[in-house]
Image (tube, rainbow over all chains, first blue to last red; front, side, top):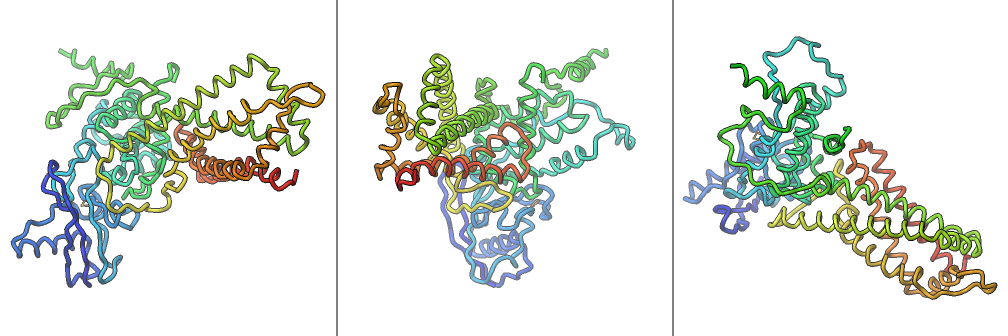
Length: 248
Length: 252
Ligand code: FES
């Protein structure tokens, strides 16, 4: 099939970008969307043009490197998948697909579809760690964690840091990313020493990076490739109240 | 020799706020300066403020609605209620002052969150579509600032019309005949239509608002709560709208 692409091209952060239209012919339905971009880039290189820059690594939804808005949706129209897991069978012959980078003040465009997500690293560095020495894997049942807590913590730990939650948030808030880490560690024994300081520091860092405030639109949980629930955000707020209450 | 262990022991024992130096990754760039932020003006503090003040206003609105509904029983019941409130004296002023403060905080934080949203995404998307369920994004959630500002403006007008409006005295001279003013006002088609529109916006505001306030306060978000927010929001709006409609069409 033939796919028309309307892709955001931008040289670097300090110049403005624009959409450029391309057409890729002979697209097989079993190709992934990123492979279509690969085809386009081969085409562009053959024509002596500049290939479209985009982030990717594992191409199986586990690393969090990829990410772009496809037809106005973070990671494209499928839920619980990263854009690397989006296949062309979900499109029809002659479709025009709009491709944009994540847009947020805290995510400056590096080039084309690649944005600088190091703000997320700095949020993690502000408190997304534990200080206890965990050593080798402990014996089963040496550290007791209730089954529901273990399951929920595991769900939150599934965050791959792709930034889709921020990209899709009408307020460009990083609440889901930040809450996933805070809530995961709050549920586990190893996370207790920094439990109170973590929520304060990580959320302060989130604001300092220029992310917006949450309005509970809940759009983040729909686009998260790992399906992380905004219950994590509710828990983050409980953690904050606990940290600030004198008797919490 | 083992003094380096003390910082870890400290962190374990007292949940010290100082991060261990070993956790600083050298390859990460300098952290930007943190803004001076108190508990209440931090990003979560603002959510707690809007949530608490919002729920406070919901309680007020429900009590107000119950008061309005007395007019369905009789004009004298309604007037008697108005007299009781008037006679509370200082207590009335305290409650009014408190409500004004709550409303102002709610408005200020709402505007601040809205303005932050503009700065957090300076370049808008050319195309943007909600991903659908389980997203809670709705017409209601997207228009909170509009419905909120209209309600704020309405509040001023509403107080001018009723609280500070024409003071009719009861024929027996025993106090204010507030119900007469209500009936007169809701016989004006323009005012009645405007009232119905604004109170529908209240329903729209509460559809997202009630659920959102509970989520902001960290109360577990079961699907039931989201649905309950819609039911309660519409019930409140319909309750308010019922009275002027009934008066306008001469049903009471
Ligand atoms: S490339 Fe690794 S998640 Fe998509």
